[in-house]
Amino acid sequence: MTTTPGAGLGAMIRTWRERLPPSAAALPVGRARRAIGLRREELAELAGVSVDYVVRLEQGRATTPSAQVVASLARALQLTVTERDHLYRLARLIPPADTAISDHIPPGVHRVLTRLGDVAVAVFAADWQLIWWNRGWAALLGDPSSSPRRLRNFARDRFPVGAGPARLARWPVTELDKDTTDAAVVSDLRRATGRFPRDARLAELIHDLSTGNRRFAELWAAGTVAAHREDHKTIEHPSVGTVTVDCDVLADGDSECKIVIMSTVPGSADETKLRLAVVAGPPATPDGSLIR
Image (cartoon, rainbow, N blue to C red; front, top):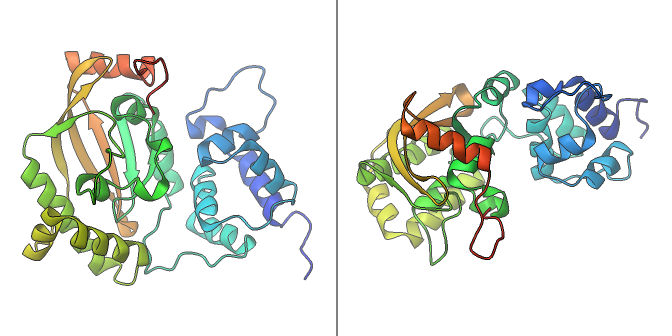
């Protein structure tokens, strides 16, 4: 099978990389910058892959990226759904079906999110799988990137199975009404099963939590269907102290993505602490290493 010049996997990744301005990804634009769009190292960082792998993809030396990598590249490149599906096909993969949970963030939503620099923002899929976060989120709650992708799930974090540390928040977080939040997350997952009844990842999540966490099983048996929309949280940050935030959850249309925004009252001490946390970056442990 022949491929039209400039239409292969590597060529398309490069084309999409070069068309995306750094400002769209909330990256600084310096006067000495020569790259038309994103640099390879910038795309690699945004997608969570190595620079060498991006080079090999663009040069055609790597031709079969995993579905997980393709999904990450599509998000980083801010592709439309049609472009994302084309990327899957170029990688010889089947695009996500309409009945499957999507980890894709529409380009317009992505552009808006990258401009929310003064708040902590993260995006979760319909099954509460974490798929994107900004610097403010990592600064306030800890960087989730060191956790395995499968465990970057708010429901797994909230209803743990077996012993293990928290995967999303690296330090203590409390709510005004824990029981209400627990029930809201469980009922939101039940709603997702109606929207995506054949999604394997969601089915595995429900099975694991139902059989491994008694609290989840009890709430699941109650049969409530609702959505998780707002909360108030207190975070015991190791560098700046106690920070109280408003937590709002917005939904993105048919994809059922959840945009979680943590903000502080303007002019408050909490706002100052959040800004200090963002400037300081990840705090250090007693042995001098960074907490991630």
